[in-house]
Length: 443
Figure 1 (cartoon, helix red, strand yellow):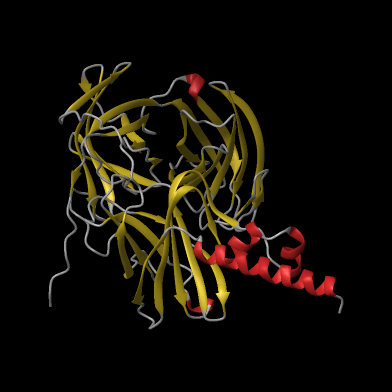
Figure 2 (tube, one colour; figure 1 turned 135 degrees about the vertical axis):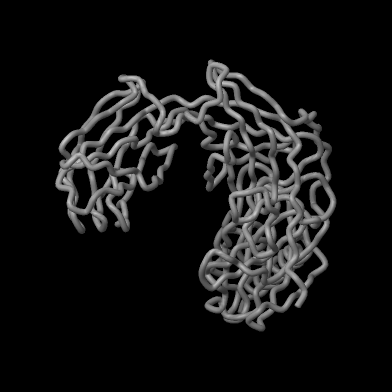
């Protein structure tokens, strides 16, 4: 071997050694490692916490090498560029190592972040897994929404085999990586009244930490926490049940902002109890809540808001009644695509719409109804028997709606009436009441 080749090899070895030294010493965000034992006997270690706009998943050593080595050397070593765990607004990243085969990590696990004091709700996130070795799996997750005002944060792992309940499997507490100063919003005292057009919306109570029941009861330790608000609603000065809250966007002075992911409500005499999840955490001072108010399906609608389709053939099983009816309502093109049988499927522009357990009406809106609602308000069969809407799912940004129907099993055809109607929005800056979790009784 020539002296030149030997010299190049020595230089390459020295270069790789320096890169490895930088990679091993330049990780940043490290924490005092903590290991806990999981219910299945395997262990989980908190490896790193980081805060920033860009967070990377995958093998940290490989990531550092991929940034430092030239392309030809990365190609030789089979290294790939780092996979971004998060890229956007500042977020907290959490890296854990599961000591065991990847197949032993439950697929339905969730990781939640919150305050060490456990006040308020928790926000959960799905997990990114990277197999580091046959017996080591990296569990990485980014939280763009989290408590930002210093103190200690808590990350909790929930694992469930089935059902809605998710028992706590592990917990880590650490100092918040955020060191910033944020403004404080002044809270208004309850009750707070807002007026829009001929509506008067009075918010009488708002709380974080509700349990599963539709009342102001604190969540138990194994329940998913919710938020709740009580409203009095008047129209033209008189109490009304024609309008209800049907969505909320929450925000705090530190930059956290999000809409509800699930919600519902019911009248309790003259008060409407609106519940949603997940909750944010109580911030210093007030928090902003923007509620969408909409007419319920039993309210009156103007002619230009209604869309009536008569004599729709009832499909059975996997059959589909194609409609493809287009019309314009309030500046939007509404396309009634099809009525699907209980096990029917249809290929739409966006996706293959999966089979349901009950008949559904599939509707598309263009442009999407971002500030309006679409409701199925009447179902009548060929014998004059009334059916009803039994639920709905939709994607507002995409403008797609699946409206479930419940009607007599001997119906041959249906007359359907839909309504497209504008929403009103009211905003409150208040300090939520915190309902403390109820501990399990000691046996």
